[in-house]
Image 1 (cartoon, rainbow, N blue to C red):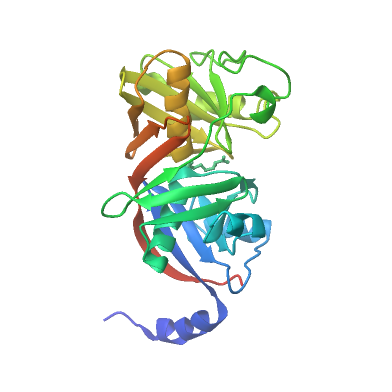
Image 2: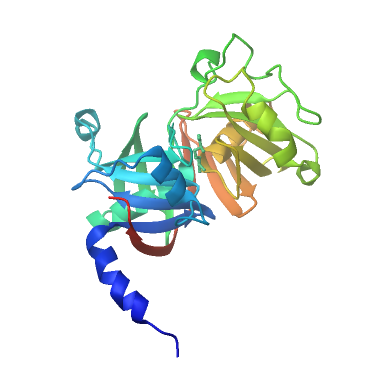
Amino acid sequence: MMNQYPFRKILPQIGSMGRPFLKMHGLRNHFIIVDGREQPFKPTIAAISRICDPHEGVGAEQLLIIENPTTAGRNKGAEALMRIINIDGREAEACGNATRCVAYLILEEKNAEKIILETITGTLECWRAGEQRVSVNMGHISKDWWKIPLSEAQDTCHLDISNGPLKNPVALNIGNPHVVFFVNDLKTIVMEDLCPAIQTDPLFPNQINVGVAQMVTDSHMLLAVYERPGILTEACGSGACVAFYAARLRGLTDRDKMTVELPAGPIEVAIQPDDSVVMTGPVAFCFGGFLLEK
Ligand SMILES: N[C@@H](CCC[C@H](N)C(=O)O)C(=O)O
């Protein structure tokens, strides 16, 4: 029989010493979620990297900290502020899959059908869309070069940057910055080889999330996203929204709804009459536990 003694000895200590966390995923995009509303959570960069490292910590693509909304957010009806921290400790301005996961927690907590969630770039309306499915209005997408941001003026619909078969992308900002390349056959693209040089090009002072898309029909596309800071994720919610928007800008579709098929599965994206973008997809729980960092 397995010796359970070390567990009995250690677990009560961990329970009183550590910060509770939940691990969730939105289409296999993995998050560690900490509630910092009563007791602030301010880990160091080294602690963030360790917590997110699957070999040393819990393992995740982002750490999400739930905080109380700011006064501006509260005035707009926000129930909570979600902070999105990349594994290098830098704060991301948006994350579609994370928004669905945290929104689901707050929807459950408030026993509500719809809530408003604040991020560092504004407020987002989120609502239930079926069993463990959430829709989020991700807001408006900008194509102004200085808002991407780019380091010089360029036509963001046809950016002058390329690497091998990746050419002529669209640059957009949905809170966080993205470029989207269109290709004929996504499976021939080796993302890890081609995307790092694009992501870190000096044209992008804040670096950039790199999406590569293939149109299947005018309402179905395939998409892979190499995210900041150098991770090929199995799904990217903000990337799905901008890829659909980019396809419309390029005249590849005139639909107002699109199924964006990522390696882990589909996200439904719809453009609203006011040009804001609604994304719908699943959320799932992995496990919970205690972080030793306070
Ligand atoms: N790494 C991104 C933020 C995360 C995006 C996310 N996976 C999504 O679902 O949108 C960045 O640095 O912008």
